Image 1 (cartoon, rainbow, N blue to C red):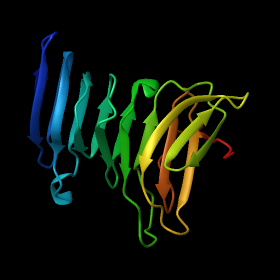
Image 2: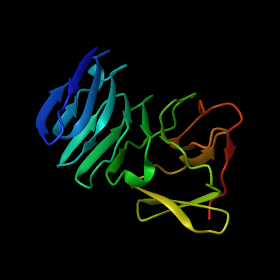
Image 3: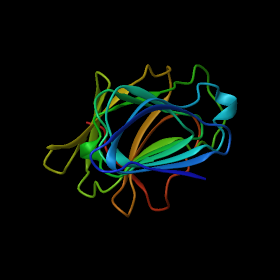
Image 4: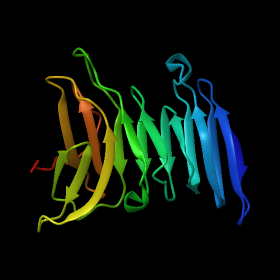
Length: 190
């Protein structure tokens, strides 16, 4: 496990390469501006884990099997969702980056585990997806969060948004069954 602490008032700009099973934590209070983080070789993504507890700025791409963002993420960042990976966003309203979503070309057998976990959206009651913008709405139909998703969905692919008992909202795309928390309920599509 590798831990990087960025002192307040400083910015770390760098590229990071990860191998299978690597675990890394990046802490603030400084700012993290990665150019590339992870790997573009899917064979080395397996079980790589990153926890980013610093605000993220700059322009770059994250390619990690499982990643958690504890702070804000700027417009210039893309986070690729990998097969059987998860992206956890602790502060959804502070996430301005883009989710790069792979799309299946043919059906695959499940269950799958890849999804985006939006933490703390207890008032979520519905969703819509238009022009690559996922909008989460409350019971009044007011948008309470948005997430930019760069994807072309395969014909027949299932899109879903569910809310768990803890108030987290999960979004996924694909075929088969999904490993969502027990007690999760599907939110209606508007």
